[in-house]
Image (cartoon, rainbow, N blue to C red; front, side, top):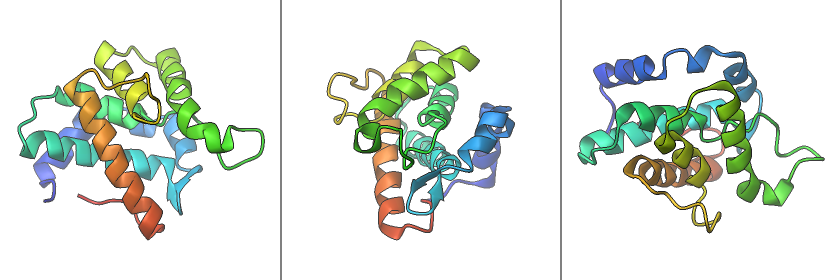
Length: 157
């Protein structure tokens, strides 16, 4: 399954100016999985989440789904460097990403839940509470697994 060009345009329209911010440029500098940048990772999660929602008629708000997926890893640091959480990054970064996003953007409750719960079940008590959050949580796992195994290529749909 692949997104159509029309769907790709719809995603760009929903993201508005998020991909061209200073913070988005910083995300391009941080490695997420293998050789994949945090920016490329969140774009893959955005695209897969949108595709799953559309193709399977899951009924999540596309605007909230896309914005939440883009901001789900908005932690803005290199977690591989000393001084960060290292192995505990997986547990702590959703809260950091949420705080960073809340400082810069007005977020709906669904967008907040998407960001906070995307690492569930690792973050045991931060459970997806809406369709969009469950979709992003799943898409993040698929993209992360692919990027970790392939290491040099982001998940494409």
